[in-house]
Amino acid sequence: MSDKTVILECKDIVKKFGGLTAVNDVSMYANKGEIVGLIGANGAGKTTLFNMIAGVFPPTSGQIFFEGQEIQGKKSHEICRMGMGRTYQIVKPFRNLSVLDNTVVGALIRDSDVKKAKKKAMEVLSFVGLDHRAEVSSGNLGLPELKRLELARALATDPKLLLLDEVMAGLNPTDSEKVIALVERIRNELGISLIVIEHVMKAIMTLSDRIYVLNQGNLIATGTPQEVSVNPEVIKSYFGEKRYAKN
Ligand SMILES: Nc1ncnc2c1ncn2[C@@H]1O[C@H](COP(=O)(O)OP(=O)(O)O)[C@@H](O)[C@H]1O
Ligand SMILES: [Mg+2]
Image 1 (spheres, rainbow, N blue to C red):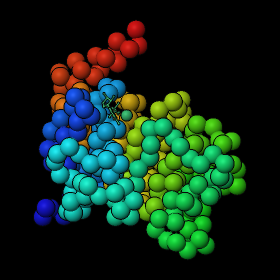
Image 2: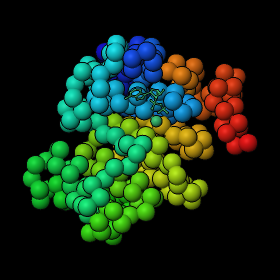
Image 3: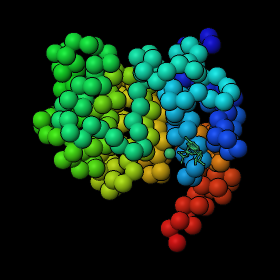
Image 4: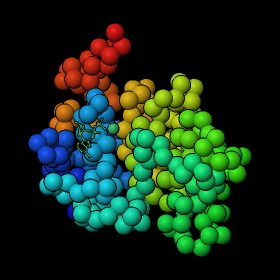
């Protein structure tokens, strides 16, 4: 891959779980400095795509390039060390560890010197607004703070690309707004590229430079938030379902 502006590219990615094709021939890319949105109804294959990009499991077929290097088949810790961070849909900190120690675990991937890792962790906690909670046990955090900790843990690994899997899920509109602002700062101040899975439409429309829409494993649309929001197939498969879900 010669294009230096592309940080991540997926080519013809397929993932089969037994008889189920969870991701069907998906190609997509993210440029350096971009915030790319990934949307689609439940079960569309979004998390599965993240799992392949982050090396949780390999694709059944297809190629994934990170900064021009093929990474499909590499282990998640190798990919993390190359500069890719992620958060999980199900937040899973070590609940018996303090907020600081949870974040240090992320920083230690980059630097095995505990003192330096602690310094890095404190910087990151301050960035996400959790420094005043550093000594608190993670088990005592509420959901908005847990989501911030999840972001801090990922940021502590010093990523160039960050994959966010529904970091706003379950938050009220006020807390969502704060996370939207934080994600914008991650891109603008830290220069980190992001791919964001989100059900909160306002968030995805506000944040994304471009959006990909998955439906039952297939990529059905891509474009700017404006283009995607008026795409008839997207309205039918995605917004249609949302309206249905509200009734
Ligand atoms: N590890 C797995 N084993 C078997 N089926 C899976 C696994 N992970 C996901 N799936 C299935 O793949 C499809 C896509 O799931 P997922 O990627 O979690 O969707 P989304 O994140 O878009 O809601 C679903 O039908 C889901 O049940
Ligand atoms: Mg998911």
